[in-house]
Every structure is written in structure tokens, then in C-alpha cells.
Image (cartoon, rainbow, N blue to C red; front, side):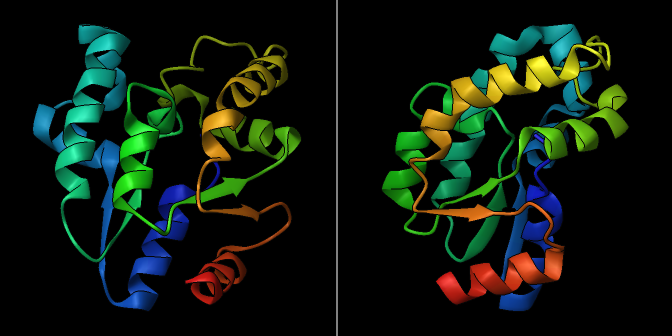
Length: 161
């Protein structure tokens, strides 16, 4: 969450001349609701099932940059499916303080944190990162993104590819 997946993905896809797909935006289009509305009206379990379904449809495409949600790799067989169908998975690693700063600016639009106070946010982010890191570190590449701008990160990814 808030690691820059979409911004970096858009810039990378543009540089590579291939399509960019944002998994959350794809789901929003299919459901004709925002992610926040899906969580509120249908619940997280429904969303996670839909997310897995859509992910598997998208992974069958060729030559694209995909931005997943922060929780996507952690549910069902999603990470296994990503790893099985892609040799270029990336984990954009940011420190907890940087993530907290970014999330705090956007907390109203993020269903998992919109009811978390700013004082509780560092603990929440740290706990989620601890729980999810096992899945994230299975990615083919891990990039340290602290203190780096989008152009620098895109150059590093391009070098890896």
C-alpha cells in the first residue's frame, strides 16, 4: 500500500512501450464501484475472491506491466500464480516511516486504513508489513525505494529486465 506501484508501473510501461494494467482499477471497472464501495457493500472476502479471479485472467495476457494491490500477493494462491506466470515480479520496498507518511495523506481513499487514527497508523502499517513481507519477498526482484523518485526506480527496473 502506497509504495508507488501504480505511478511507477505507468512510467515503466510507457518507457517499455507496453500496456499498463492496474488490478484495482480493472476490478473497479468490472464491478462499477470503487474499491472502498466494494469493501463497504460486499466485504473484504468478496473483494479478495474477485481480485484472484481477475488476477488470473490478466496474467494470461502477454507483455504488460501490472500493478497489484498491496494485499493481492497475500491471499489465496495469488503469489504462486504470479510467480508461476511471470519471471519479472517486483517488490517495491519502502520503510515503515515512508509508508506511514504516504498512507496518512491518502487515508480517506484506502478502505483498510480509513478508520485508523494517525497515531495508530505506524503500528498498523508495521503489523501489515510484517505479515505480508513473507509473500512480498518471494518476488523475483526487491527494490529499495526509500529516497528515490519515479525516474530513478524505473531506470533500476529497466536495468533488471
